[in-house]
Length: 443
Ligand SMILES: Cc1cc2nc3c(=O)[nH]c(=O)nc-3n(C[C@H](O)[C@H](O)[C@H](O)COP(=O)(O)OP(=O)(O)OC[C@H]3O[C@@H](n4cnc5c(N)ncnc54)[C@H](O)[C@@H]3O)c2cc1C
Image 1 (tube, rainbow, N blue to C red):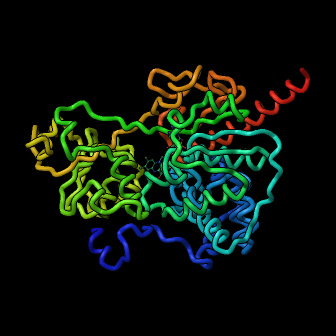
Image 2 (cartoon, rainbow, N blue to C red):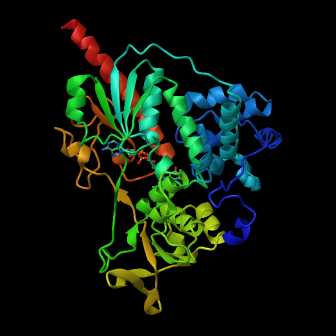
């Protein structure tokens, strides 16, 4: 149970998975067989040269290992922590046949952390004379586009709605899985490439895409993610103490960073909590609720355990920390008194039940907001609100010069998939800006 572990820990939000020591990392790297046809690379969405960086690490060349990581990723310390390695690189490692795959993610994390702590590598700054690009949103997609374009000689300005850059990395994924200092450190590295960040600026309100293109920018990238949470259509959904998990996670993150006080976090110690949904966001919500002092946390899911969308490791850790799971349980109604939640009415294979409950946190997905596209001309979205893009130039929307990528373009996925797409879009943006400049020279 988490509470027993907690007594020996400084903070309940301390990082759960501890990194390698140098000796452990090198020993783990030495286990890599350096396969001729490395399956791990096939499992990596951004085609990292995994045997390459592991081989350098195994010889103690951590700077050289970092240079290999930098070739494909702007966020290795983050991917090393939050990528679903069990399905990707590690899941494809040939040593799975012996039940002991190389722990690729933990090695990636070790190299990135070591490099930052020891200030090993420093990237060369290139002159910014190829054009000016506005990036909207600073999640993994926006950060990747910003970093890649800055390295290629573009002047990049990032416009971010929140007080700090990072998107879901900063305000969604909890501190105990991804410490916010790590996110800040990775953002600083992108800033050091010459990227400007304008925070606390909501595009669509303070500035529009039209204005960006009219004034100074050659192209705009929309990486605004999915900020509108989906909800349930059941009676009692508007009761006090029934709220969205995204709001809860954001408030906890702000509390942990010292931005708000404890009373502003929507969970009172000792409450019994129901989390609706069983994806990774639901696991994060349940485990965060336990850390904020909930007496009992129940994950309520209408399907079976086999159909749960959460990663097995996330589920296992939630179980270890004492989260209770109600499978094949349909939520029928939130029952209140004086407009405040008192219970949830559910139906499981045994029939209907009323379970007393102090708080409900809904984690059933999210979709894009329409603030950016509704305040500018010609950017079309599909019937669900995802921005429509094309393949040539890659990532361009129905409006010339406006590109999009990451979760705003397709159903929410993962950090590394948002990065993968953003890398392709940054190439599309570079091609577009170069072509427009060439054409204007020939006019
Ligand atoms: C709680 C949670 C846990 C997750 N855990 C994992 C995990 O462990 N591993 C994993 O791989 N994936 C995980 N994911 C999914 C992953 O985080 C997303 O797929 C990824 O962040 C998408 O990146 P993005 O850049 O497209 O969008 P986001 O990260 O959502 O970033 C969008 C940014 O745009 C900004 N923005 C929005 N509108 C505007 C506007 N009008 N003006 C200016 N800025 C704006 C937002 O503030 C935000 O900073 C998790 C998601 C959540 C919600």
